Amino acid sequence: MEPVKGGALAAPIPQVQALFKAADPDASFASWAIRYAASLDGVITVLSGMSNLAQMQDNLSYMKAFRPLNEEERAVIAKAQAELRKDASIPCTACHYCTDGCPMNIPIPEIFAVCNRQKGKEAYDSATAGKGKASDCIACGQCESACPQQLPITEYLQSAAKRFE
Ligand code: SF4
Ligand code: SF4
Image (cartoon, rainbow, N blue to C red; front, top):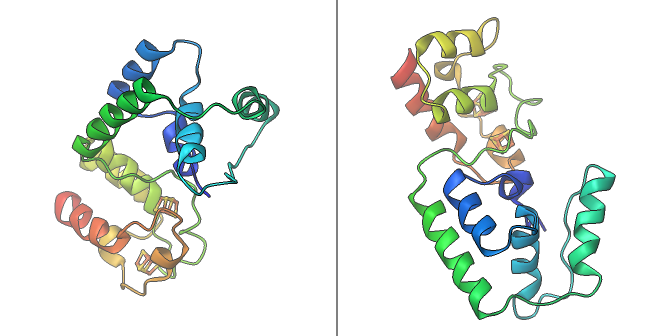
């Protein structure tokens, strides 16, 4: 499940996009993630969430007659993984699964977007206007149990509070 990390790997950071495009200009970014998962030993099914017809057609184009990653493609993936490890941004996919149950009405993904885009206090104040602030978090843990990316949300919020409040 989640081969494309909630869509994050369908639009990866520019350094990873450049690697994939150089290796195969016609392949979608999602195809690298899905073929990687499907090429792992012991994997017989990959569940990829698709939200429109174009995404389904893209998936079918390389999964109908599936070809596992070859050596060169594995090397490209290894380079992409190294680039992703260097990236310090919060890997939030803005799915909002965490927000509905937050008793403090904290706009978690919007706060993380402000952090990731290196924006300032003004952007933070705008993102949290009329809602909970990062420092309002009572660490109830609801959001972390709902997050499919298993992010340490409360820790990130503590950092955001220190940075912007
Ligand atoms: S831990 Fe904090 S951010 Fe998460 S649901 Fe509870 S109050 Fe909201
Ligand atoms: S913190 Fe997790 S659950 Fe909340 S929007 Fe980001 S990825 Fe989704």
